[in-house]
Image (tube, rainbow, N blue to C red):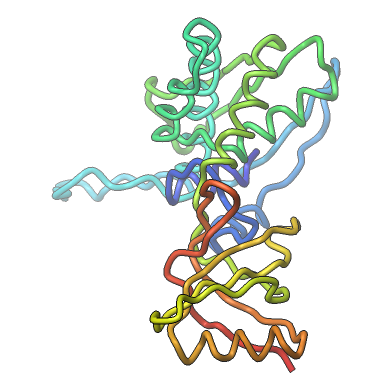
Length: 254
């Protein structure tokens, strides 16, 4: 859940691929589990944040200073959870995904939905209650909630939202490694379509990409010799499977 918020504090997306931003991973390395509390399944998470330093007396700042990244993460987390709670309530009435899609701009993602669903499974009948005690050395304005309650009845909606987010998402800078299973090129065409079957984010997928003549010839040779290939691109879902937009770094294995 914290990693989803750390990614959203950098860039709001409906899905974050397996390879996360380094800044988010570095932040997660500083987050610690605190002492447990009495009650049913109470977890404490400590997210360090630098203390606020006021400008020297008589100094005029041209703009309001930005919050440090650590504070942006916790603000994003609480605002995203509030947006998630509101989206689930609206989606239950409207019967469509629109509220969840709108909430992406506030940090809602498939990753956050998955995290909430996973946490709620510990006590399915109780839902989830998330509270923040803001650091006294860096106060926060009242626009960001300090507590969000996600009812158990909203969890199935979040699970479905996560699934649909992943189905519709495009992933940038995805690398696939596998074998060439299909080659298609018209007799008069210079470029050709190549289908690679391989692992992406831990799942086997069939991905089609269009290659220019020289690279297409390499793919043909790899197919004939049953050699593995690697390629990077933007993964998008389309009717019948997946396609790489802007394929690059096509390589044939040894």
